[in-house]
Image 1 (tube, rainbow, N blue to C red):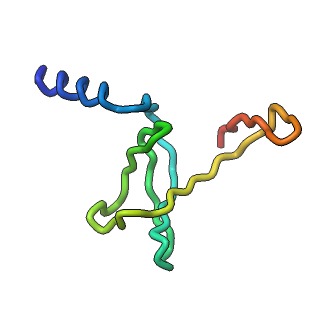
Image 2 (image 1 turned 60 degrees about the vertical axis):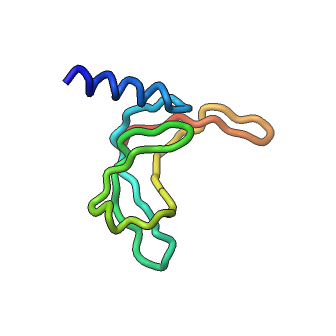
Length: 88
């Protein structure tokens, strides 16, 4: 058991970006004309994410990950806005 924890720690150190644990509903679109499917984003970083899907074996190698989040503008300037994520 301790060995497993040590291995997990070493794996985390190899990641290029820190990961943040979230549990956020999303969709993946296989981009083949089929209907987007539900998934859950489990953790996310600037370089990738871990998803929970119904059937990982049937997943295409490349797909479009989509999620929605309600936002409120908290800052504006000439070409950019800052937003705050809202709950719900």
